[in-house]
Length: 491
Image 1 (cartoon, rainbow, N blue to C red):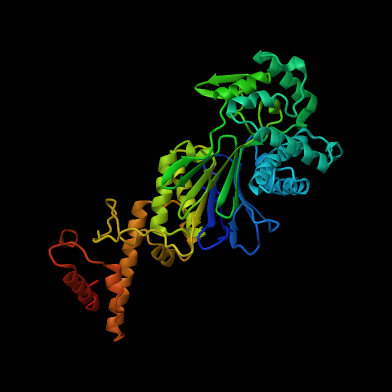
Image 2: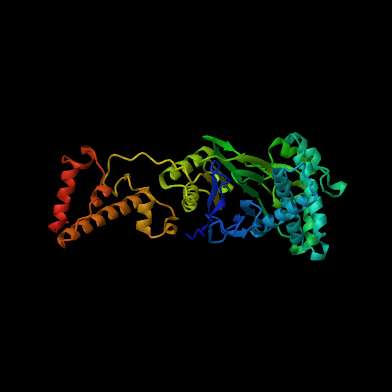
């Protein structure tokens, strides 16, 4: 099956001083069992001097040297036009809004984080407005001037940010740049559906049904600002604790249901799934112009600081539908401790999560992005060395000390991209068996030719073992006997 994988990896920020870590990232996206790939990975690196790599269909761009990088996951539905459009335009709109905020000193004092938050909120609304005009087939001449768009979007972002509790938000949303006929405020589902059908008939085939979630992280130093819209999710491992950073925007949440109903919409429930107007299983999204008046395009925003080996996992619901928050964090922490924390290793860990979700039956596109803070002078935790070996067997699962070694994996596969596919224990055991056997043959060949015997080759491949695992003879005698058999041609 062609899963159409895409990979990204990059250094997102450099240490501000010796006490702060740098932030790196790695991500993977696969098509999964869906007929087409509608997820999009976003990698927006602040400076060209920061190393980055993109493989496959992912959105990459470079910033303007403001010290801010951005990563994101966009889960499209109804097509891929909205998710791709959002990944391409949110960074551009963010910088435009940030420049306007800075020029007018809209935020209080010199609070750059407040400016970043306002600009990020505004970029979501601007991107939605632009896509909605395209989806309706409106001409470019109908688009308002850029400065007016910026002003309107920033004002809405400020109003939204000023709300202290989620209970206040539905009331404010009724007054936020929304206009629709008063006679549409009819709670009858059939009445609203008929009006939607009439709207579609009037637009003909020009209207697009595409929509998308949007979850983005701004990275400035070791600070991360998370903006979420829809049912993608961000979960952090901060200070040794699993910390959810977002909530899934579902229509059955009381605050979301109240907002939808106050706008004249209806929340239906079929087979346990709540939907807006019987169509969309989330209450906030970009696009979806047929029901946009019942949705919200204003993201929830949170902020965290990362210390050494803290990390954040962003992913589409193709992952979270089948793997819990706790288990995702455990997999990342365990694999990182074994393999290391470089950007390319993070992309491999992201791939492992994608393939595990696929193995568990996920029916959706699956996209994962991992952000990690790590100091140059602090070595990542290493696993305790195993003091035994188990000979490879195709008949049962077995473990080997080198089974998770990145160096061994690189030597066997040539490049890390060969590892970006599901690894099953039986295949790993067989590969490890071949690796040990090949090196032993090389040892015997060197002895027969009179070449100096490598001093530590066998010792590295066959660490000290317990008698119960290698037979009645001790490991040294067993190894020497095996070498003699090689020299005699017995193997």
